[in-house]
Length: 199
Length: 346
Image (cartoon, rainbow over all chains, first blue to last red; front, top):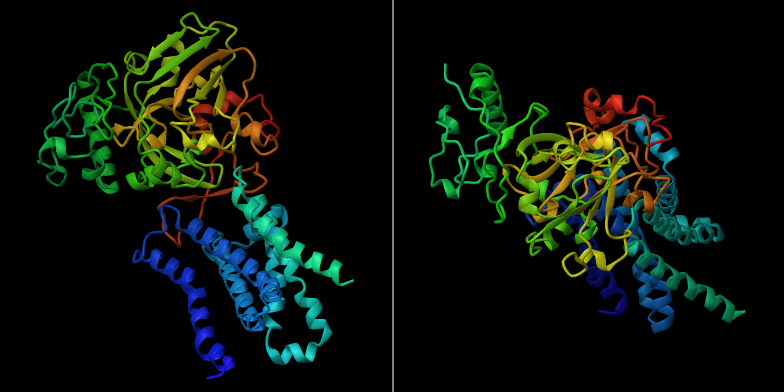
């Protein structure tokens, strides 16, 4: 088997399943098989899915720097899948809020979207991710040409909005959002430095 | 007709406990009494049935059989049963949350900022020996040992709703002493306009204090009128048992018409002061948390709408329920705020 087939038929399925583990654990905990979601399961699901969404945004943003540092071009083969997992976790983070937390009560949902800035930020990030997810097929990418690149640069904005959303949401302990902010700063800072150097 | 003394029965052993013949066959549990915990024998439903039954008994028996007031005796042993608990008419009929909900989902930043951190990190905390210092504008001040501090007062069961500022709520069967009785016993002078409270500050015993998430020690306060409202209690137990560490052992404040953050835990100091005292969350974010922190569905927190709340334990698909003004305790407390703009004084 050559490297491409290996990636396609062995490594991609493995990574795919690994990316589903947090989701599977959440479902397992929900039914009390693998553990428990605690006294407030809706809040626990909300936090877990949001956290994993943000982690996958960071992992996706790490692909390009890793490729450049290690020179392993095959890393790029995983980028779309990782990005789609970021979208997946943030989508279920949103649906959990929309259906279970707010009970699809439109008045409350609109009020939250308009009056709670951290929710406005998070929702904006979801819209951008949705646009990237639906244009992620190879066919659409070809047809969009340069415009595709422009659209998909918004993943940087998603990273910033995601960390900001988390930061505004915590009451007093900003340790975790601070960690995400630091990671994001490294990932985006690397790109800035590279651009400066290549000029 | 069978009559029952007006005392909450936990079928435990210990001094001061009145023996009561179990009446309904399904509540009869004859095991070795020392092995039985109230939270084991009282499922939520039975707990309520028993309360209904006791209420009926109390009406039938009348005041003649009411048990005499007993000195509060709070054992040291974790989960020990507190003897001689008297029931109280302010208790709600709503189903209490499970013992597990009440003791594993807590905000007590002294033991970590996650909801299950206090349960995990407070297990080895030792709430004795414990002293409470009373100072400021009062005739009687000083430092008191915990046992002496609580001894003069009746221990009562108060089943209260608890509304967190994070838009969730529980129903908790507290055991405590009336804060009004405590305040009056120290004979505050006319200069005592407010009562201020402080939590223990000790980084080694409270690991959460190693990080400056809040300005330690945690502090809270109320007007003297609020502190002498009959609803306010200093809780020393929950579910008929000694207060677990994660819930604020050995003594914490419970003011059910205010957001849970007012319920300061692990109290070591009570001060009678002339000016409005500092409160921890107000210091942390003044535009988000006011001094009063009364439950008010009309004044939203910047991060949470306060119009509705999630009742913990209601299930995954249960809708949030509407939040009530003063958490439904308006009848007892609304008069305290009749001249106050609650939109500004949130």
